[in-house]
Length: 245
Image (cartoon, rainbow, N blue to C red; front, side, top):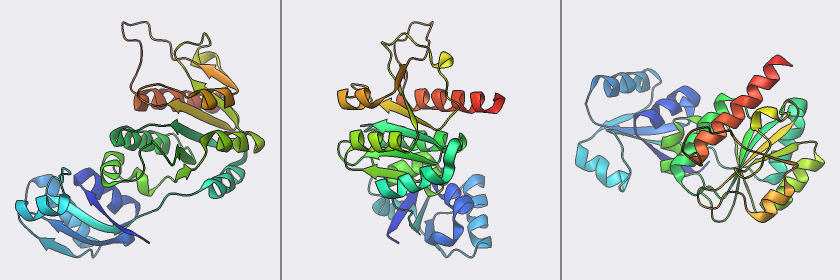
């Protein structure tokens, strides 16, 4: 496995919870109560800790906020389209995917991974080009979710959406200009929830692959939501509908 760095208390806490066996070593400074509690957990898991000062952490972090702790670990890598389809087939009628069309902000991708994991999705799908991928910033924002839910990186998103349909998934895209409310759509079967990027929303080819377009009703003054917020709303509406079927 490729080794990477997790930076910040949330990211390292997530690693300890999800996969302590993949942590190789940790650099930390002695600090506040939360940091001390984390290093105690690391020591209990027999993770080697090197005590360093703030400047040493800054050099290793390369500009990423570290909050006094950095972990080197064997990172879970992205899966490809064929592995994604195997996951979908294994999930059957319970399959739930979050598909992100050119989401470029790593903080948004990290937040989407957290929401997808919390909603019980089997994977998050992103295109290879012009989109955020797994990085220290994403892993920190995901707070451990990046090690617990697969991220599928695909070469051609439109083709992947076609193949997901062939494997029985209903593809629902969120678009503000459509008339159908998210809450009136049927999200109970095998589902790919498709979200557009921060700037332009769904691209034309992605939009054309969706079986249905829905919107999130917004009675207030704002015209759009952050993509990670919209993804959470869509995912948990699917969870709500599935729980009452």
